[in-house]
Length: 297
Image (cartoon, one colour):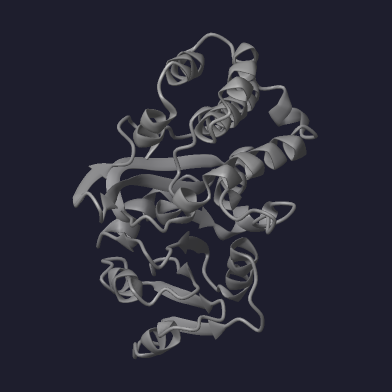
């Protein structure tokens, strides 16, 4: 029996520096039935030249008719995919050779709609590598686990196409950072999560990552997401959803503290229940802001 086709979504905007390593890591997969949907979001560097240099018919290059937000670009790329499964790889990350071989058997259960794995974080500045997740990764009906401590790295995410298509809407194009988290949580409301704690990919930490450069945007997007999900009865009734609200309060307090507004941060302290977030905020409020910044970075 032929392996099911996996469509690997690579979105690119001026990604020439690391692009070859990302593509090469897909071509080195021991799982052979895949296609790359390469969506060039109007790059102005050598990205197009690099992508088109591969004489591999499985790499399908598309040039965006107009530059769009990242998650709108992901939706455009998905629309071109022919596979029964979708996987995602950003141009600054790469996969280990048996990534798909290890993950695809997780879909033998027809109720599994998405799968993930552990991964390495590799810091260019520190010249060191560490595991992203130090504990076993939850599996099965994992909605509560995802809300309480989101554990899916996009570079390990594989989604059953029928599960993706069952959603009311695909990636939320309003988000610049949290669109994959929103997608995975919405999927996990009706589908099981398959997982392996084995690291199968490498996330490159180079100081220009979205999540590093736009920390305040994480707070803004989480606030927007909570407001939207307040209308979803199945979510808002969960204790883990209340925990997400507490996470937002903590992020707001830390953001204000890092901006030097200690008083505003202190005013948010009573809104947190007793637990590790309140303890961490109390400790941060007692430290010099310069030291808090050093610890956060």
